[in-house]
Structure formats: structure tokens, C-alpha cells
Image (cartoon, rainbow, N blue to C red; front, side, top):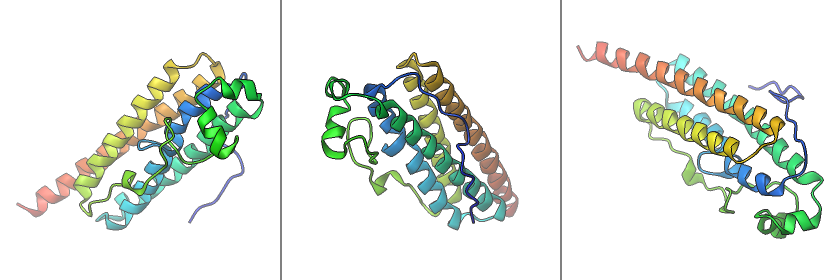
Length: 189
């Protein structure tokens, strides 16, 4: 189903270690509006979509969300890789370090573990697409907040790229929603 290209979708650069920011980025790694939740949600919902076009759309976006998850993981890794223990101890990342060292773990920014309750699926294409549009807007807003919390130009560049992809996904889900609603309206006439 997938062909894995051994490179990131977009380059990820980090000026210097910043464990504080790494912890905040965990929101997009294992949080409710993060990339893992989105990828799993769309991959799950695709099975009950009524058309091949909507199934394909959800599969395409789920696959891209996995690429975004890899980019977030790379950011977190680079932000913690060169950090010394004093930097870790003086940051919110210290709690994560106690349990996982500098290894990545699916938690949100406050340390809550990933849960399947983040993955919504109703077996109703209209409800699912509206949920997906909301999820993309929440992710976009989170990226805005993360951009506000850093002055690292490389990190900002990567986060802006990811934010723009959320906007594109929102638009594509909206187009699919319009198409399905028109199809349902024609059937009910």
C-alpha cells in the first residue's frame, strides 16, 4: 500500500537543543490533535466511506500524516539530542526524561499518554468528514501556538510547512463533504 521514501517530506533543522520546546511538540506527536491521532483516525474511517474517491482521500491524507509524525519526531529528537542534563532538569521535559530518557514516547505536552479515544469513527461519512475538518483546524491552531513559542528559524519553518498542510487537508475534506452531500441530496429527490 505504501512506498517509503527514506527522506523527510520537508527538511527539519534545529538551531540548538531546547528540551522545553521538545516537550511542547509532544502535543503534535501523541496528543489528541496530533499527527498520530489524525493518521489513525483517517486510516480507520476510510473503510466506511461510500466512494472510492473518499476512501482514497482518507488513505492519502492518513499516509501524509504519518510523514508529518516522522517530522515531529525528528524535531523532538534534534531538540533533545545535544541537551545536557542541566538543560533537561531545568525544563518541563524533565518528567518525560525520567520515564523515557531522550527516547520518544506517545504523550501530549503535559505527559498524558496517547489513547485510542482520540480516534473518532462513526460509520457516517458526513459526521466523519466534519470531525476530520475540525481535527485539521485544531491541529492548525496548535501549530500556530507552537510557532508563537519559539524563535528558532528552522523550527518555525518546519512548523509553518506543517500548518499549511493542515489547511490543505481541511480544504480537501471540505470538498469531499460537499460532494457527498450533493450525492445524498440527489438520491433523496
